[in-house]
Length: 332
Image (tube, rainbow, N blue to C red; front, side):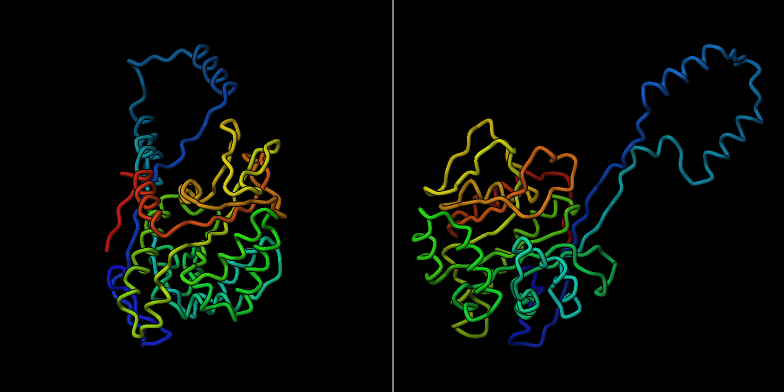
């Protein structure tokens, strides 16, 4: 249990202790001046003669007063903005927020998202929701990361629908291998969703909390059955990517395919690129959703399924940590 912050609602009365807080230091955007505006300012300055020796002192004082009306000056443009996020246990009050986050988990396909939200909330020894610090429990989460044991949840409608969705999009030459995996013990489905504008720096604590909690659950859960259910050997991840329009999807058939070096793939969640690199099996398909960001107009929205060995997780955690250094601090 990360930082001693969890007990399990499925089995015990939950008592939450200290909550990890992520502080991001973000520089504000500076206003951009067009070249045309710069030329106009230059012309006006050349046409206007200013006698610096006889400058009106009262005018200077007025300018200083105007400068201070909002408590800021030009020197403030480089000041850092501190943004704090809290990593919290999933709670009943988060149900509607989780439902909104997970509503498009299967790319628009209908599934029992309410049942999935209930499962995440009930299993609060392993799983985290992200909120803005100080916003209170009533504010909807902006991210969630959890994991569900395939065999333990196989009778749940949402799990059956998720498995069918993945099987439907699995290429023929991987179908037998993938379906065999779905029947194995010790396979976890990682649920990882967040709103699009969540800072990427939140990836490291989210990933660390998940796998720390999994490790602790194998020792701290009250029954042997539950402890065993968190002893994962493999993980399945379903995520979003963007692929160059003219590129062939990587990993469609024939196991994990190496993409051409010239093909650019965008991972909205930074940890996914590292999971993809170590995955033993992966396949992707075109998403039904349309890209709304002008920056990715030339990219095709994709869905990516990856299978990752549990013994590859430390490598992923190391790479995520190296990706973000000095940009934030975590308080426990």
